[in-house]
Image 1 (cartoon, one colour):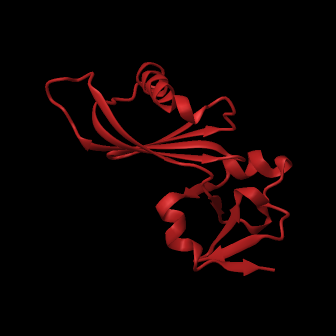
Image 2: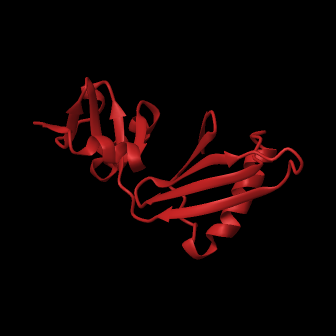
Length: 149
């Protein structure tokens, strides 16, 4: 699990989690919030918009965006969850030689590759040395990517 906190946004990357059932997403969100509070000491209270991105190769990405903070009820958490099944995920990196892959794209001095085009052998190194791009950020850059051949 990788956690990135940026102001009112908390992103949780759960790599290769196979046992998550979309029918039980509410139960899983409760378990995830408790784990974030207890183990990782994250202050989660108030009203949140939650986007859950599923990708067969990567696993699950959960974005918590705080909409409103509560002063009186510090333990109250209210979630509005939106699930995005079969989401596209790309990796952004600066070193072209990180991967031996023909399906690499280029934009603004950075290289991009789809999660679907990464071999199992290269998966761990690309996760460690790159930024994961998904959702709205990916939609904003996807049309301007140039194929590197």
